[in-house]
Length: 301
Image (cartoon, rainbow, N blue to C red):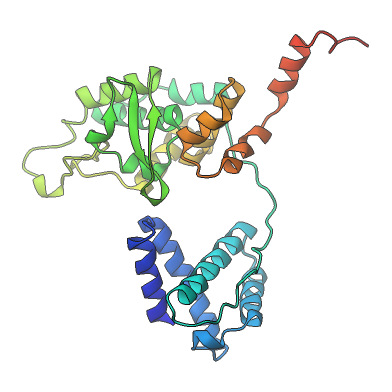
């Protein structure tokens, strides 16, 4: 089973263009699935039954895993079995037509415009690191980017004269995201006055000359560093933040400002508009205010 899991991961990486993070998550989930089957005495994929899969799901739920985590693991199992059938390893497909466990719809965490302003208007440390950190926060909120996307930004992805950043999202899917105002100014400030200082001479082996955002040794930042930066500056102004909070807030504030849903879908890189529509449920108060202020009979009693 472990060999088949390795074959599946290779397929996901090479043919489906799965990101390293996605591949790593699949590996953990399927290793747990293979271990569970081994404990049940099942080592041949042709003998796996629907009952085995149901028992695996039950074991996940019994451990108290969040519904979203269970759904992700079951999705990995379903993709794995589909791959085995497609590749001719077996005709047995125990997860065919098996629905994913339902999870309660969870609205994304967002912060208010006032809280974002408090975050971005706070004093930043003087010097190149402060300029870099301000640019990271401004771009995360100003462009709605994921942490992995900002880590992967290369200098060749920047089309600042035209006001765009080329972003590679999940599965390597490319999109162009507008950048303007405070985000553009902060990014230019960092590029002009900080980035070259963070690439000291004599450390070429540790440096990444293509990366936009670098550490004090000139190397590309990691997702963990981005998370730490966001959490640290959020904590300074009393906010519990992670990068996705700023992405969610970007989407919510854009919709509240009247952005077109399809345009927002493109900016966020969502393949399905139903994902983008989730943000329409975050805060409807502005819709009621708009209705009350504009409809001619809204205030007649």
